[in-house]
Image: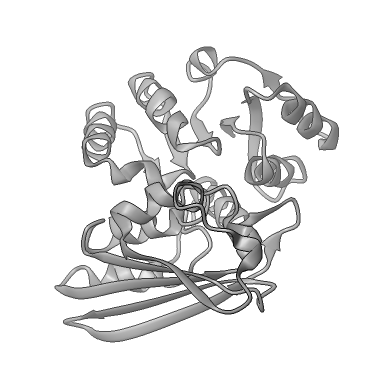
Length: 271
């Protein structure tokens, strides 16, 4: 049975642990870690069957098969290289860290040298299978348009730096337009999907992102438009925000769970 260690006991981390605990994912939850002790205690109190150990990642990675990162972009820098050196596969949720091309290249090389896999769930979007298939030939453009209720953008570095008063937005308002390389740094908790799109498609500089604050919404909307030698496709998903964290879509947690199910299942479907 796949032995899993998890760092980051927030919304997505908790959802993953519950899925392992109730048997949705056929794996063993061996260990967990979070710098926030309260989050660790809260997560442990929700588990019925699993009894993971709480341990530092430096110890954890020597005893598990797969490290699941649900913490932050900083954790990708701090923990993922060490895990790969320890010949441990990794699943990364904070995909925005790979806007740093040097980090992306280093992680890819480490994974290759240590015969490890790096898994990036699709997150809160649909259409990655089509994009990956299309990338076998030339892709001309990829555009992501994200609409969220203003409160879902609260705390983003871009919002703080530009002193944007989200409470004063009373109509559909474009907050940001630019390449994915800038978007994932400006909104690290909101558009990790832009990073995933960039890696699967034409890169961070050529992938375009528009972020819209829309007070009329109760759901997060992601629209993707792709043009290439294959033709064109557009996808749209209206995501229910996570009840525990309006910055995160419920589908992001479900995609992480689906990825773990695929890793542990010998029967594989899709691209």
